[in-house]
Length: 296
Image 1 (cartoon, rainbow, N blue to C red):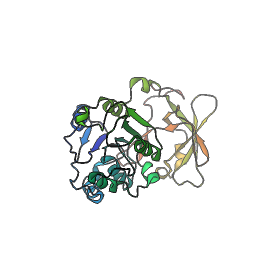
Image 2: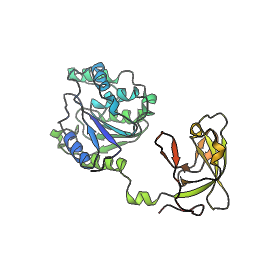
Image 3: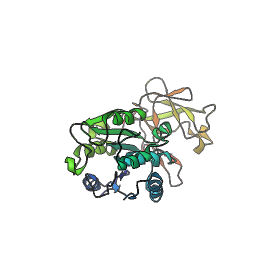
Image 4: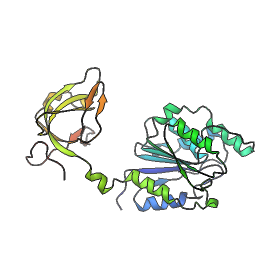
């Protein structure tokens, strides 16, 4: 089986385990697709410090291709885990989560409210990648306004599912097909999506450094369109002799939304792969091709 570059880590909630609810279903289905899935057993003591210490034992499994999933108490726990990461993850899914305390005098609720103290929302949001907040229209544990507060603080929309309760096995959630389908859209590119990609070969006419940016180079690229396109790429540190790039051909993606970088608008992206030494290597056609030739 071909392994996916993505991996998934799921954090259970209060009194939960890696064998509860829809966790085994998601794990089994994703592993069929070549995705590594890790479902740690979090401490029985519902103390944030204990959960953070536990996460530190496996945090090396988290990287830029990781999708993190939290359920119930696992959601605020994930926010604290994410705040300590050095780099952003690929994506985060929060199911039946909460980010602040609410009116509930139960002892177990009071234990859980310790997990929502001092969440640095802006810092955390920058490291979460693509975020999806999922809630139920009849959650017996988390009030609707608390779910909405969580999505608001994370500057994302909220996806409500009808009559899903707290997304537990007792609510009929031993399986979670809607979550599985969402994860597939994050892991895989559909054929129709791929056909939208406008990738073409371009000829480098000019290269110059961007003032005030140690990592950026500004390219003028000929795609056979009659005038060159401006593209900014963060590869300057790998090409101190950047003028030697003039006259080379490489592959670019052109139908990305124009992006302003250091006051310069970039109209595409240079494609490269990591060489054996870790430095970027341009994707160059084996034979002579016309400037602007499309990938097909």
